Every structure is written in structure tokens, then in C-alpha cells.
Image (cartoon, rainbow, N blue to C red):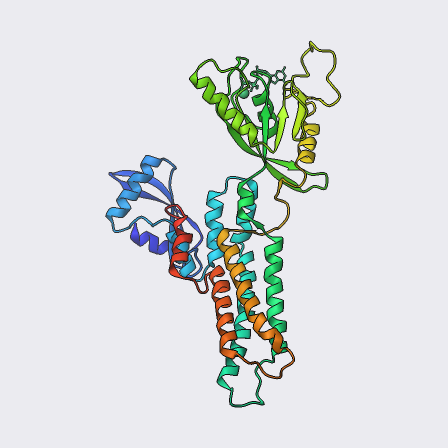
Length: 411
Ligand SMILES: Nc1nc2c(ncn2[C@@H]2O[C@H](COP(=O)(O)OP(=O)(O)OP(=O)(O)O)[C@@H](O)[C@H]2O)c(=O)[nH]1
Ligand SMILES: [Mg+2]
């Protein structure tokens, strides 16, 4: 087997069919080799592709461990790739965020991190800031040669202002990761059996909730991300929620179920009400099951007639949800960076340190040479430390540890 693996590395990136001998049974196996440094971690890598039976995989892993292999730690593959310079810290965070993403918006934001958008941005500014610092430090070394000025105060102001503007623009234009986690909630509300869960499924386009003619089918809170398309083609994501029908509680279980339903209603950004209710700013009133011969003559003009069975009125309902949401939906169309708290902190601290340096340099703007060189250099070094911690060019070990601790085993 080991000899075979060596051969696989000689013709990398090609699937080689083989088998593993297991207690005289032959287990089919495809082997894929990656010769370092052209691999994920930069090392020589061999991937085994086996029939996806968990018990079988356990046996193979056990056998490999008996022959000297070991399990990877959480995030070890990506950490090794990071150490080999294959990706920067923000890209590693993008991979962790992809693994944990629960919505389209999070997947999209994770993709931008993974592609290195934030890393490339910070790397360019690290270069610019390091150059400015080097020029200031050159002044410290040549203080006795008055006519030699590595950088004039005016030039330094210009460079620092430019860097600060780029940082502040990014902070102003990016959104925070927390906003992605808190998708606006659109809650389906009404009496039992009115058709909430059927509408939930119809809006999602999949059978997510159990539906039944019997009242009291839904007992728990169901939540599922839903994509809506605006008139301009951009997409927004909301969390669609289905709850138990509102009813009088007959026992302790009922009252817990009703309490959970009411709490969910309290947190709703938009409510779709399928029963009788008072009008309110965030409520869309619908009249369900319009495909059935109706007992009532016609619905009130503010009540949208729909049928989850035929799809009638559902497009109008989606439009109404969008208009009630205004700009609260989480947009996923824009190639907009989302910043995790660590990123925001590092960017803000960089700005603060540069602002402090500028406060020192600005009054000297018309001078030929800089005063307070050591102090200014110190502030710029602070700024550089914060900025370089973003991509991991200079990062205390505890930050690196925290980033990789969020991975699951084997990634
Ligand atoms: N004809 C017709 N029947 C519908 C429609 N929507 C739901 N139903 C039926 O109404 C019954 C109740 O539907 P559910 O979606 O389970 O109702 P619910 O409001 O979620 O009920 P609870 O979870 O018990 O509160 C089921 O038999 C559905 O098939 C519709 O648009 N047209
Ligand atoms: Mg239901």
C-alpha cells in the first residue's frame, strides 16, 4: 500500500483505482495524490476515496493508525497551509466560516474572505504603512545630517491620510458579521390548521414542515432561510419562521408551546397573519386556501388572497414582505465584505494609531524636517502591528490559536 502511495505521487492529481486488503476482503479505493508544494498544505498529500459507510471508514482509519498514521487536530490541515504561506489568516477564517455557514448570506461573505479580498487589501496597506515607517526611522538614523530628509512632514501627512481614508472607507462600506447572523424574521401566524406550515413549505419551495388536516400539527418553532428577489434583481435573505397555531392552552405542554410561539411573534420583523387580526405596520394579512369554495363572500381589500396549494398570490406576498422589510433584508447580491469582530477591532485600532500619529505630524506640516521622530515611529509601529495582525503577517499566538480553534477536526 505504502509503495503504491509513492507511485501515486509520481503522477499527481490523477485518480488511481486500487483496493485495500482487509482480512482477506478487497475494499475498492480511489487514490488521489498531490505533490507538495502544489497541495492544500504544501506537503505531499494523498487522498483516499472509499465507499461512504461510516463503520467501514472507521475500520480503515483504525488500520491506518495501527500503521503509524494519526488523526489530524481540529483545523490542522488549514493551519499547516497557513504556516506554509498558502493562505493568510483571513482566508483561514473564511474556510472556518464556510464550514459554519447556515445561510446564503454567510456563505457569500465567507467566500469573499476565502478568496482573500480582505487579506489582499490589508496586505497592500501593510506595505504602504511599513514604507512610511521605514522612512520615518531613516530620519532617526540620519538626524545629524540636516540636509538629508527621508520624508518631509507634508509627504508623511499625505501618505498617512491616504492609508487612513482607505481603512475608514472599508469600515464604512463593509457590514459586520453579526448582521449576517441576525437575518430579519418573517413569522407565519394564525389559528391552528389555517395553513401556516403549508404556506411555509410553498414559500420555501420544499417540504420542510409537516402539515396535516388535524389541528395542532406544528408544535415547535421552525426556521429556514428564504431568498427573495427585489425588482432590480438583487437578492435579500430573511429567516422564515413557522410556529404553532395560536390557541387556548389546555395543559402545561400546550402553554409552553403557546409561550414559545408568542415569544417568536414578539421578535418578528414582519408577521404574515393568516387569521383575523388588527392591522399593524409590520403585519401582512392574507386569506389562505382561496382555491376552496369560500364561506365568506370576498376578502377585505387589505387582505391578500392566497393559496399555498395552487401558488395563487404567493408572488404578491413575497413583494409585500420585501416592501415591509424596507432595507432590513440581508442583501447577498453585493460583493460586500463582511467583517468579523476581530477584523473590525484590528482596523479600528490601526485607524486610532494613525490618527494619533497624524495629530503629531499635522502641526509640523510646513516644516522641512520632522520632529518627535521616535514618538511618531512608535505610533506607526503600533498601527502596523494592528494592521498586520489581520492577515497574520504579525500576529500574537493567542489570536492564531483562537482562529484555528473554531475548526472541526480534519479541516
Ligand atoms: N385547499 C387548500 N388546503 C390547504 C391549503 N393550505 C393548507 N391546506 C390544508 O389545511 C390543512 C392544515 O394545513 P397546515 O399547513 O398543517 O396548517 P397549520 O396552520 O400549519 O396548522 P397547525 O400547525 O396545526 O397550526 C392541511 O390539510 C392542508 O393540506 C391551501 O392553500 N388550499
Ligand atoms: Mg403547522
